[in-house]
Image (cartoon, rainbow, N blue to C red; front, side):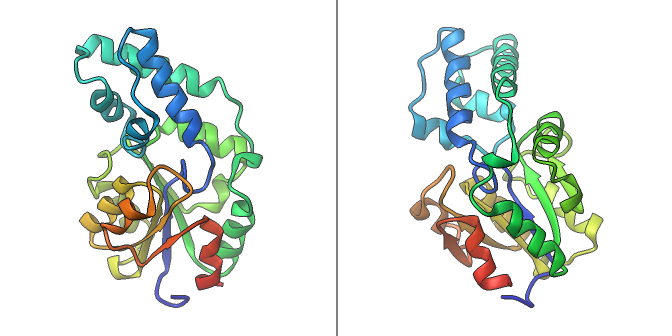
Length: 216
């Protein structure tokens, strides 16, 4: 696959950085704060990758619009209370990104995070310069809509057949399918290999750094 792609688009949470358990905790705490039945971890994980508004609506469908806004705000406050650093990346991820960029690949991020959330994460990990472009759910359509991938490809002038999506959730895989691009799943995050495999990724990897076995 070394010469097959020009652009590699990464999801963020659960793909590059080990934050899935923290996101689940923050989603559960938001529900608890407002008296809702707390979702099981696997149920909360299945919403990771969606915009936070869509995730909250999925987990707490009985909440009215005002309460859903409060749930989103509580989630965000909880999430930002944790200070991230490069140490939160999965082992070897930073070096992998540097190596891929130095090898000539364009790198991008397509995430369900808000722009404020991604800025916080990029600054905390000092990685903004590694990515040609990033797209967030609050400035375009939420996954699995392919709009953010289309925008990324337009910005980088990469064609669909030369673009790869790397993600840990079914929403990443479905977005890639909807955009008619290839995908690679990683099983260190939100969803299992069985779940990801339903979308026919090229590979399912245990860790994102295994990409180097195919691209270095």
